[in-house]
Length: 140
Image (tube, rainbow, N blue to C red):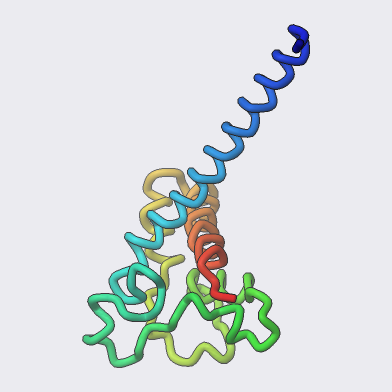
């Protein structure tokens, strides 16, 4: 039979695992929601570059599921992706700036709400949500 201590430990373990799983699902949901709002119209729901607006753009949106594969070494280029999305830093090799500068857009909203320091923190958090989400949709 199970002792009271073993049952309590098992219940605690199951609770911890379910909370961890919910937190992970929530983190993925946050990134996917940000992607849907900021990126999907051009890059498509699946990130393949086939969004509703793609046909109207002079520069075809990138297939965001191939960023790691296209990096040449199959390693997700985390910092470069962050810089391209943020857009406030010149990224060599990115070409002209056809994509919106999300860092400026997010920062204008965030500064009104959180002030300059808090606004920059909130801006980076939103960009990071996108970077991590894109990392999660990479094709092998």
